Structures are given as structure tokens and as C-alpha cells.
Image 1 (tube, helix red, strand yellow):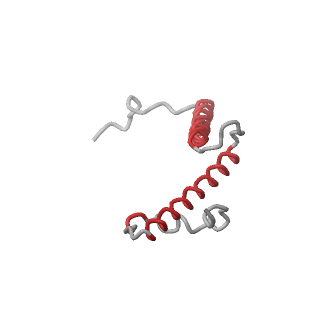
Image 2 (cartoon, rainbow, N blue to C red; image 1 turned 45 degrees about the vertical axis):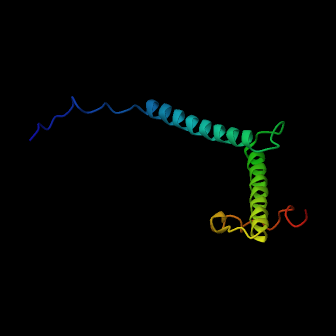
Image 3 (cartoon, rainbow, N blue to C red; image 1 turned 30 degrees about the vertical axis):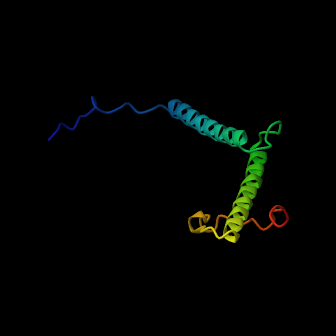
Length: 110
């Protein structure tokens, strides 16, 4: 079919230094994407102003905020049910509000 020599269509192999440079650039890009994601989280989670932006701090604040949001949504659904409103389509996805939400301090007293 074709000649055994395909050197004109083959790309030259990368040198070890080029491979290393590509790996470093990819890793820097990955780390920057993670930093950008944490910055976006820190910008939308209330109470993050003036706090450290370490990943642990941002994750902890995000978890706390999401637990508060889930508890508030459950409270709203319960209030709506008490008022006779059909809340069938208001449910949280299975398991979202069940795991790790037992220690939330909000919800029982108003």
C-alpha cells in the first residue's frame, strides 16, 4: 500500500527536556484551574471576605454554607407542607440532605 518509510508524516519525538517542560506546564495549568475554582467558591460563599483563602478554609466554609442552605430548604418545604402546598417536586436529590447534616445548629428553633 504505502512505502515503509513514513518519515515525512511522522512528528519528531520530543526530547526529554521537552517532555519535562510539557509536564511542568500541564501541572501549572491544573494547579491554576484548582486555584481559580477555589477563588470562585470563596467569592460566592457568604462570610469569606477577609478570611484566608487556603483550600481547607474555603472547603470548610462551603460545607457549612451548603448545610445551612439544605436545612433552610427543608424548613421551607416543611412550612409549605403545613400550609397544604404540594411539595412533591421540591425534594432534594436522594442522599443530599441526609449525610453529614445531623450536626447542623440551625433548624429546630425559630
